[in-house]
Image (tube, rainbow, N blue to C red; front, side):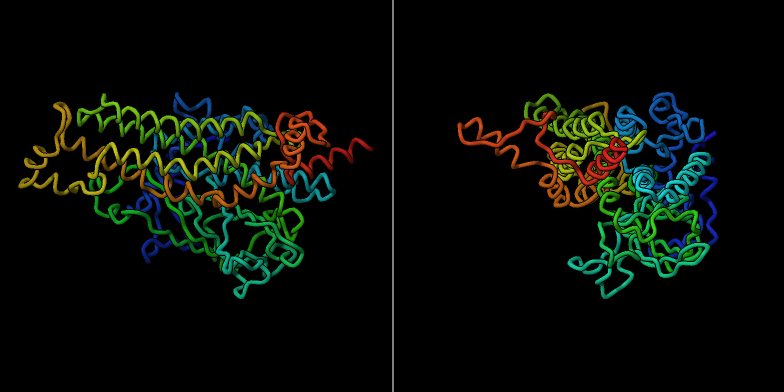
Length: 510
């Protein structure tokens, strides 16, 4: 059966013999017990628990025609627009249970990206990558593997292409090809959840030309592989995890990102899905970016829900929940949250079947979704802090609360409305601090799935200004060459749609 329990996942990642994982300069052998990584592991675990829990199992399970079994949706290939919408809904739902990034989405999007890309390659006569990928997909689904997607390279000098870099490893590259496989070197940066994963799916981070062919590589590799080094990055207040306790130390759920170094790593040929196929990198990047941007409408809306609930509770603790200005702020939080979610659902239900059984999100709506996410989380956080007060940044520590000499005073001076304790207030304040000011809701919302500038570039590429201009000229009574399209939207085809359309025309002519 292609479904594991959360405990089975924990048991599978407990021992790492080959890869090197570092936290604060020290090597970690067991990520399930390390206090720095345990909150991240628990967040990952929630995605394995979801198919077994009554309120999420319908969203978290999907039928796979590849293995003829139910699989975890995080390893599913989208077969319909309803599948795309179920993804967004599931992300929102799990966010309510973890209050953090659960780190499995990039691997999910990487699988779907490679499925479409290799299918398009097969339609143009290159069938081997598709055959290899489908076999890999079956393994992932049967074993219900935990995947990390790795796309962002170190990049070096941003104005230079991969082949022009003074540091040849600024982008992951092929260093040697043998009959059995390839060797790769380089690094992938800011890789979400990688230390808690079982497999890393590597994709190129940008469109490339023939001169960059050694960098046009996509593959999958077990996380516990010789030559892989993972350096877990620092986050806001992360040292609290080492303090123990159950309020300040984030003992529950959180996320991590890491720098993944490939030090001349061998990749067997059956796990290589793109090898110097630079001409498909443009579509691959476009497909992945849209998938990942669509998903943000679910997970960030879910975190928005957590912040709305915490804002409302703190207002009640202080007795101000009925004040008009407080109600206005909470209403605005709701509006911003639901706008992000609505865009993600629109990107799903207006999705595109780019090949038989290949459903991709609507690229315009997906980019709009992510651009809303670059803006709205910071506004939601500001409103939450406004409601909660400066205590979000100045609350006494958990250890002050537990100090017998201080406890009575803290209980006296931090209590508001009767029925709520000082501990209640500190707990809810810490929740706002951890969620609203954390990497997943603030920094990742800006730069995850590409920078705001990347989405604006896509807007301008997809929106047909000339068409809109001709429509306006006609209505103004000027000479116009407008030829009305069948579609309601003044959009151009994406590069992916162009390739798929070209393939279909070739078939129709035959």
